Image (cartoon, rainbow, N blue to C red; front, top):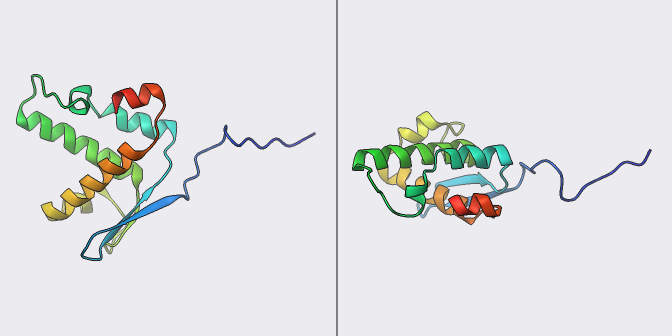
Length: 125
């Protein structure tokens, strides 16, 4: 029996990461590859009106809640390490000063937007 090795149909390589460093020396390391399941989890909390820039019918509070939900989901699915003396977790992330958390949010959104998605996924991005 011949063993087959697919170069395309294979599980996601979870070892590939990208490290982002803040001018302070602090850093965050994010996964480069996401599985279909992880992309779906992120897209599920990313409403279309946030993606296209319109906020039709949304209050400021509703927009903050939606963006917070997206950022937390990105954090959970992407962050593998950081310079905080704790394993990356949402509770610690949410307890950071707002300028530090905002920097992380910016990195998370930019990193996710830089990922190549299929046609249907990119349409929601």
